[in-house]
Structures are given as structure tokens and as C-alpha cells.
Amino acid sequence: MVNIYMREDQFNNLIQLNRSNKEEISGTMQIKKSGNDILIDKILIDSNDIYQERNTKYIQYDIEKWIPKTGWDLYVTDTPYYVMFHTHPGLRGAPRLSDADKDMLKYIQSLTKKIPGKENMLVIEGVITRQEIAFYSYDENIQEISNIPLFVNGIEKKLSKNQSFLEAFQEGFRRGSRR
Image (cartoon, rainbow, N blue to C red):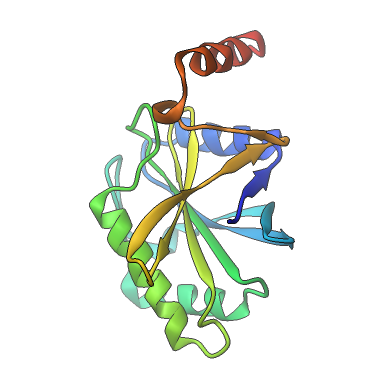
């Protein structure tokens, strides 16, 4: 099983990116591999010309620009993981994949089979809401989407839907004490 690690400033910057934009934004993350774990190294925001349309509910990509960019990104990635993300500015609560997000994740995972040397690459999609970030992957063998654990400064960030009452209270208290 793989885990994703990021620094608190990276986490906060992504949450702020979501809060400060009314339209969905997407991008990729450059990573370093540490055993089976993923360390977020650099966060790259997609340029505006890759979008055909975007708003608070969805992103529609310019296919003539998006497919070559994504294919190239997959090809040049030197780790067995490809990490992408997008924001959900209107969503409060636990980040989850929409049906369109699930289809996109499955499609990009299928693209890896068409690129020599990338047949075993795992595609990971991050979803960012106003307070949380979640990462998902699609296993073609069992045809299932699963959540990948996220650790910020070494502490696991459980999704609000998976937290106990005590954990939710402690998380809220920590967030409130930082303001």
C-alpha cells in the first residue's frame, strides 16, 4: 500500500488555492519516491489555455491541448506514479470524486497501457475542497477506486467522513488555534 506525504505549507497552499478561486483548477504534482511512499516535491498548476471551459462545478479540457500534454507528462514521469489534482471550490466537507472524475481517472489510467514502459504506472487523482484533500487511484485488476492515505508533516489526515467525533473535535481545535 502506498501513502502520500506532503508538508503543511503545501497542504495550506492547496487549500488556499481552492478558497481563493471560484472556478475549478487542475494541475499535477512532481513527486519523489521513498520506498512505497510518495513525497510531494512540487505542485504545478495547469495553464489556462488547457481549459475549454471551467466553473465551480466542472472543468472541460481543450482535448487538442490536454491529450498531448497528459500523454507527454505520463511519458516523462520517472516514477511509477502520476499524481494529478483538481479543486472543488463549491464543495464543503469530505473531498470525493464525482462520476465524471471517476471516468477521467479510469481513462488516464488506461492511457498508461499505451505508453511503452508505463504499463504498471499508478495514476492518482487529488481532490481539494475548502478544508480537506483526498487522493484516489483506480485498480484496473479489481475495477475499484480506493482512497490513498495522506500524511501532512507526518500526521495522517483522515477525511471528515472517516473521523470519529473526538478526532473531528481535535482537528477543529488545531485549526482554530492556528488562526
